Length: 296
Length: 318
Image (cartoon, rainbow over all chains, first blue to last red):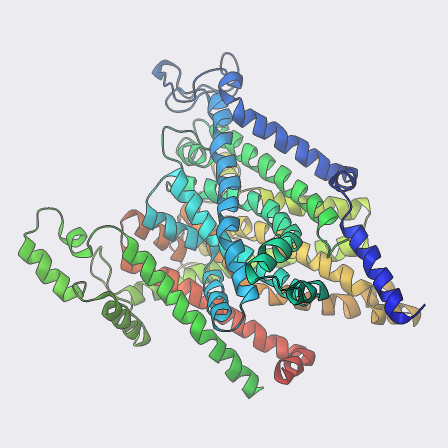
């Protein structure tokens, strides 16, 4: 067998490995017990958010001044807050703001960063260079400080906080996409497609994009946790979700003032954030292990 | 070396241009007129127009941008909307506080992360490794503002060991300064410890499988010598290079910890200037934090090329 043929056979073998179906990937993912647990917990939290009105024992915004700052137990399993609202119900509804912030802001960052990354990777030269210096500049800001500044400019609110988080995350996806494109476009198959007369747009959307997806999705799943924490931090500072809508960050902010009288108020939202983010992080880590070619 | 330095500084110029442009555009997107904010709703149109002329906000945007950048190059960062004091002296007054806090946090982070990362990599795929890695992931999942509140409850409200908040400068009273520093530095350092530990673990694992480590082992060197002298020394380099990213994490974390513990540093200044809509001050803080990250990156690159000659060669050859 000549060297060339042997190389081709090895290449075919590698591509077969890369194209194993989703079921194979899922089985490998499930073998990592921690990651599987993370996924189960995350699905549970998503279901809690979706079915919040049916799960929550009472309204998350109904105030009752007769029963304010009640310790956990009795009719209010996790106690009541300074306005007599049921903490458990607020916690359950709070999943919505956190999940929306985590998933939508990352989705938005990908939706903007990915096309820009494709352009920067495919059209090198001036356009690519300008785009890359721009991402360098965005990455030069401390993420939370940039998010704060953007949120301050846009004004308070969950949707605006999500935009602020997306702005901070966007360059990350742009860089990963660009790196993928640079790697892929050097491959022979792209040359072959171009020799067959394919247009740039077709090469980008039909060939470069699908082959660049894995690291982007993995990075996205790893960033959801960070986005949830950032939204909570913005809400904690009063720039995210606005009252009376319950969110874990703003619940912590309010709880800070009642630390001596009602310390339990500060305990539950923190645990909720930590559990959610931990679940997302271990699931994302597991996903990276099975899907990212660099660790395979 | 000089060529490398020159090249590296030259690369910073377009980045700095975009950094200043982003800040300028952001601040100018804010609805409302600075002069009106400054004078209040009851000001006469003439007074507003006069102040706009004085502030220069009646000029075209590119003129305003050029004047702003020109001022900064001369050390003039503008004046606070709140009390008309110059921004730069206020910044300079806050920098040592945040510097002390982040420095202490960095020490906390490395003291925890280096042993944890080394042990996790050395005992890879054992209960120790899984435990340490899970702890690091948990560290990344716990929001630092919650950690801060819990620390205040436990050590200040419940045990009365440490002050709940407040700050005494180092120059005034060293022991009170230390007592005020402990909680914020630990809270800030723990999250970073998780980041550093994960990086160190993966780069240790990579180096441990390198040929020279196998050679060292084959020579009959003891496990500890190979681990510390051969592996850790090489593995710590990539961890140092991401100091720039860590700097961003630290400054962002400082915003939160300074707010919770009432530490009068840059982070608290940033949050307060958002609350009072003092945008020149906010511009100054954001500009300074971006600048310090870029400088840390430059410094890391210089130190890096001094430690590891391979980098410099690769840079000069390209």
